[in-house]
Image 1 (cartoon, helix red, strand yellow):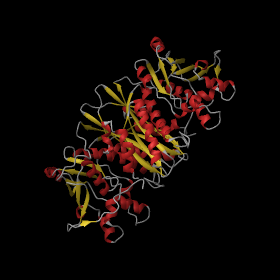
Image 2: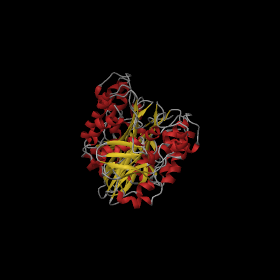
Image 3: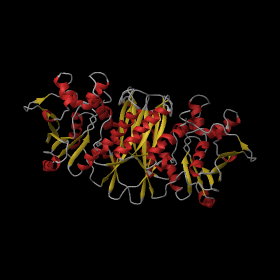
Length: 314
Length: 314
């Protein structure tokens, strides 16, 4: 099968309902921008053996690649509508692989209301690599930035921290397996609806991909402020509590583990009433004057921080 | 050096003059769309050993990756203004490599008037891979499509065909080296200015990346028509003529070789007067009723066509 018949068979159906794609027949996609909106653009690249384990199903790989990107749009507060896909396929890739991969994309297109707008299908001599660029709209000036945190702001997260780290350890066979936790690693849930609801409430926002502590520092650096986090307030899943209780894992690992894809954001205390109405949010700290991050235990004592998160190059 | 200091040192300077990038501090870029324009989006992925030879300088790799994308914008007739960059770097990548790579991008940003809007820097276990998505503007409804060729249209190319193929053979040591020809392979020239000048003149257009014959067939398929090409009218460089005369290469190879990045377009015969004023264009054939491609020699006899171009998967 040739590159062109693959596009015809597997990719065109993903683009069909999306006129911007020009049915993948041209050199580029053509987008309209509604008046008074801005276009939000983000890109994420994933490689086999680094961002997902060899042996992960093509269906899951496709969804993880798309969702990482959608999570960035969620962080900005945007409504997602499309993506472009650059695929580097090992030579042994066959039609069955592509069928499963594109089925994963089709399912997520339904779930998240976005479509394939264009792409490039290439052969690589290395392992599978996927670069997705995702597109969203946002009312003019409403995007959440990392730079907007103010002294005195509350700090929130949108869900339990460290489950993806636990899921990865389980998938590697380092902890007893639990499918729900492995799914938290393999199939993150972009908080798109929450992102939109936070328009006008969040002063700064990002999605946690490098680990809570490291991503908190990103906000501090961008906003020129410090953060005080209450370790005992950070939400953890029952499984995380159980594994900590048994001594299998420790809190610092969870706070440094990446791939949570929960939203981490700051908001004025005056927004508490509005934010209390949104389910799943937990207040975990306060923005302060200064720089850097301090982690406090339930007694107000400072907890030492070692590794702050995942880094690609050390 | 960490991922973050690399971004700070090498990538932020490429984004600084481009406010849409948000200085690479956020999860996404934020674009405005001028009224009555459409946004043109294209993506191309390149891998070491497939799209460029191991040993190519980082400077050249960066420029080729960007220019392949800009060439797609040229084909659509768009004015390029930015790009996002997803980089898969082998673990042995060092600061010197990145410095040279980003210097290549900086030079081309100057040449082509576009800026880095966002990106993702990742580690890969495989060879270097680069996915660029490029962005351009075009007045509403003015984009060239592949679908617009009409029966009776003339067929044009913007420059000599097959030089990149010759350059690749030279770079591989299969032909005596000539730096100007190797540069035609390593450093294609996107025809951005020409693309804009063709607005309202070209009925269908693309950039030749898979080889003249195969790309001509793409227009025929998309426009539901046939093409008759005069082999003796197809422009070839003096070097190509020389190598053909010496029996080192043959015309079919040149017409099937990829990476020319010249524009191939169709236009009504009524546009000849306007097109004659644009330097570098050569009329090479006619659009006819039917389907598929026929190649004629100077006597009007049909030439056999074997391989029509480069395919990633066979």
